[in-house]
Length: 390
Image (cartoon, rainbow, N blue to C red; front, side):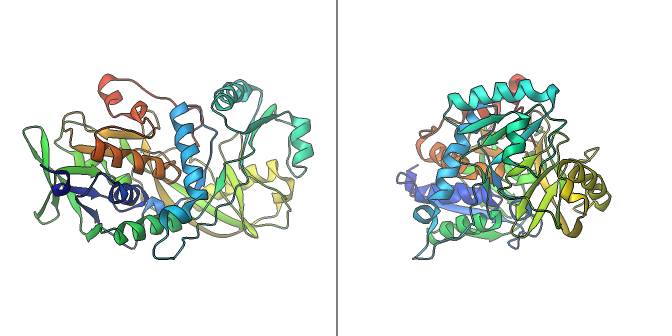
């Protein structure tokens, strides 16, 4: 079949599915048709729209660092990538860094990660408590042994804005978005030949992509792959305080709580005491009481805070090793997976979108080797562990 005749159907029109569609439509060696199936074009429950939307270089796995290195350059130059007919997307990229805090028990991990990061050219500094206090005098450091601060290439942005930019660019390039509920993949003789929709209709395809986020697992029922991906609820809390935190980065406390400024307020979140897979997207307000205790300890000025609003979204959590599962299904080579990003999907969308587009158009990753994230590691029982999971 000629490249021009190829039909690609992507299930999931969030940032990942839209990024894959966009890069594929832009690829000079692809001349086929791309269809994106999205059940809810309002994105009311989409992780892309509900995320805190940040990007960092401070990973421990080299492939994740490389993905973010491309990602930050893409976001910085979004005008040249995703402008449509003179309309330039504004994603409000703010590069103020990530600040990882560690007690004595976690200091060795920070140092090991630092060595890996520096070897890959990441601009990151280790700070002893005295230097940390001098740089951020509003921070309580008495119980800390070390901190790691990203000096460049880390920060936050408008995740919904990035999703819309990819979607608008893709549609401008001829990608068709279909409002429908996908229920699975029809296959025979080791190849997918259609995406099945609710009601029984089918969209024929030569390539299919599962980019359904927290809803990816049931689509693979019957294919022989038990995808270890679940929707895990995470709550984000927006609060005000009379405190002042000049030059505040995104802070990762030793407890797992994170916080960062958002204009004149702050937002924060923390892992729940126990994760329930696929829990309803309802805000756990009791969890903010725990967050407040940690906030008040780490930033004494946060003793007085007022919760303004809160929302809940899903991490598409990979219980196997908390890293993305990318590339061909082990038994169906024309079914590509882009699943299990475990909270890193927005920042990884540019590199993954480009990579899977290359796989379809060229048969291999040609810009950045994403094979360490291959789904094959599930079959082989291997794990790619990331020490810096938030």
